[in-house]
Amino acid sequence: MGYIEDTRKSMQDFLAPELRAIAARLDSVEALVEANERRAEERSKDAEARTQQRFTEVERRFTETERRSEQRHSETLNAIASLSNYQVVLERLARLESKQNVSAA
View 1: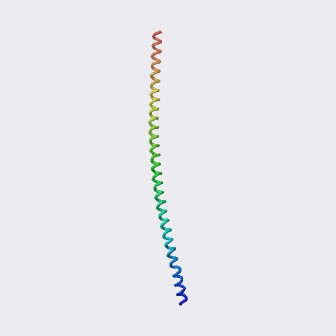
View 2: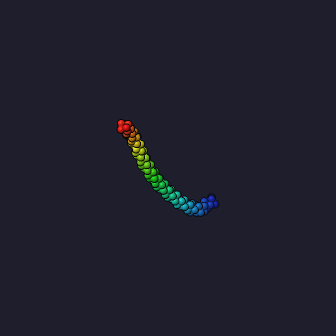
């Protein structure tokens, strides 16, 4: 039994400090990984916020452009309608002038 005890003691004397060193290194690696994960998550949230802000701005611009387009469309239709009324007035004026020319002759 002395040989087994000696072997066990020498393994513990050798392995225990090595295992503690490995555990300490593993803890530091885990801490680094967690820190990197936190930074990556923060960057992701920042990027998402910036992207959302940009999409909101683009949406606002599209809405404004659509509003202006509808306004210009209405103005164009009103101008066309007034030209139509102008054409009617010109036709009536031409008839009146032709009646005047006929009665003057």
